[in-house]
Image (spheres, protein in one colour):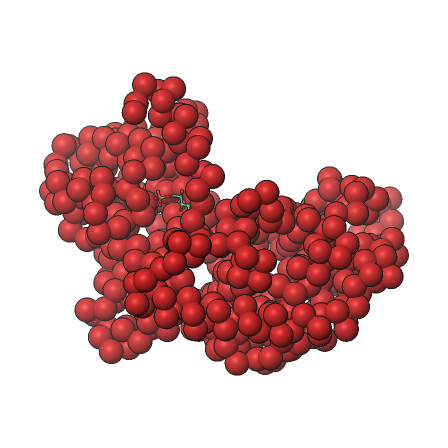
Length: 475
Ligand code: PA5
């Protein structure tokens, strides 16, 4: 039961069907009608309710607009390349690429993790270490406003010159500040601090400052008001009906990605291709529905309440962390919801694998596997110093060793009745990362509808904020 179509991510759940899990292919087939009903609810009922603006209490909030976002943004762009939102994003990206050498993206949670994931997945490793020529004049990118870590903030401000006048392009920097509510303390405090340093580096020139601070926010709120007071030349919106952790394919992720010179059209096309697959393929051939079915059965039948995403590529660690937030904030409600964990292998085989191999039987391991690497295979190589006894592997390259590690780990887990599933990414580029984002967002909302938990909203996050503000003497 493998989803394998040209140009699509493939999902293979065969490693969950083990005697110890008690889950069989017939169980997954039997779940198909419920999975397809959940899909209908997500595609038809939720989108209709959103369009009509009449949301029943149990579905409030209903942030389902992420679903049609890729097609909508692409259609508007194709109709009007310069006046559309994507056209404006690309113009701003080009302006910043020409004006500055560093961009600080301020944001937290869903206003941060997608952009970080895109940078780590799609830019070459050590991108920020490269010189401007090697980067093709694309700015270095840093992320702040995602914590209140004194030393981390000071470290970045120091790197940016602590307000020193910007003389050459290498000294010039800009801020992209992303906050849907516009009221998140971590991001707001960082904006104030980084904006003060930026203004100082511009000799106090408010007009120049207004060109180098680009907000992405809602149509009202504190950040919106601040942007107007500053006279910001460009302002982008977090679309109505799109929640923070579902916003990576809006300006929230697209603007930082475009500044990094990534192919944002391809990113959206990948997401649209996944939408088409989700809408049309039956359960059993549908990567989204099969993924949900496998996770659900394992949790229900064999107590696998922990979902480990084993990413077999360093570039995908931040994608895994983005997914941690998506699953945790969407389904971790009412004392329910699986716990996500990202492991980067083979690295974490040397830190987590002992527990995964022999610890509690409460985990489903999903392998996120890259089928084709960007660079030519790097061989181990022959050496006259064979004290390390590696000459027998001299002709083997890292991709072959990685494949052996994946197969060896799956065999070891299956040998002890530990369930695995494989998610194959043909390669790590914008098109497939767009597919993956959309697949995991769709899977999360389908699972929510399947188990009767509203995947939107994060009411539990408010408690810490309320207490923190009280402790700080605010109301
Ligand atoms: O998923 C979400 O909605 C949250 O994680 C938010 O993205 C996060 O709390 C940041 O909120 P805001 O964009 O309003 O600053």
